[in-house]
Amino acid sequence: MSRTPLIVLLLVCAAAAAALPEDTVRASFPSLAFRVYPFDESRVSGLISTSIRGALDRPLNYARSYLASTLPSCVRRVVYLDSDVVLTDDIAALAATPLPGETAVAAPEYCGANFTAYFTPGFWGSPALSETFAGRRACYFNTGVMVLDLSRWRRAGYTAQIEEWMELQKRVRIYELGSLPPFLLVFAGRIAAVDHRWNQHGLGGDNYRGLCRGLHAGAVSLLHWSGKGKPWDRLDAGRPCPLDAVWSKYDLLRPAAGIESS
Ligand SMILES: *[C@@H]1O[C@H](CO)[C@@H](O)[C@H](O)[C@H]1NC(C)=O
Image (tube, rainbow, N blue to C red; front, side, top):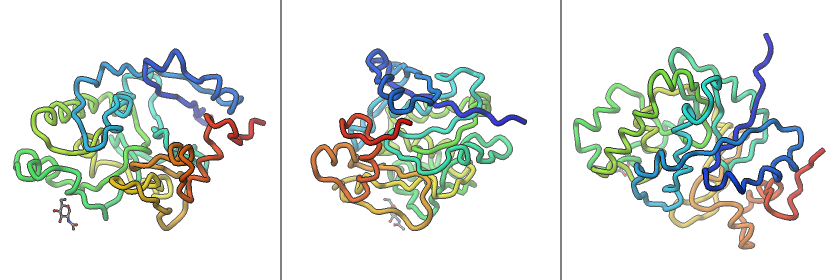
């Protein structure tokens, strides 16, 4: 049996597609097979409610909910990665994560996180709404690193399910963050767990004050600068957090970027 080739698919907003730094990517990774898929922002812009963090309200943040229809139907499995990550391991191992039965999503789960905090008191106070999680071992997971089975996704119509929650959010405030809560509503407790090494998240720092954060205990296959602060901003401002040094080596838009292109 031949190994499925890994092809890198870049999602960009349609407005940026014309000016996309494709040459930058090609110059840095000459042997990389990649394809650019513009995301039609009008598909989701009418569904976005204002969150507590403006950066989360950008339509491209929601592109992950539309992969099943943005990518051709022959693409059956994808690894979705946010743009604020650095992989330090072979992504093929992550891509090969077993997805039992009709499971469509695999990601590291964090059952120690306070799940209640992701939804409003109004949500928990409504029996009709909070019943959504009845009988589910619902744990937080971060949507910045996910293995998705798009065939199962398409069959189950998960995009429409996510959109239904977003429509409800426009009428009744049931959460405060952006694209994450609808994912939790549809998938929490129904995902395949991935080792935590694949999402060392929170390196962007504290969501309110942007304080530096260190790595969690354990192995590291992927570093994720989720949270308010971003390494490129801190580096540009000359006030990096210690771990931002890892990012600076891979910052393609910095003239001094030191990517080996051999
Ligand atoms: C979890 O979060 C909710 C809502 O923010 C809060 O009321 C509750 O005290 C928290 N529970 C724990 C164990 O921290």
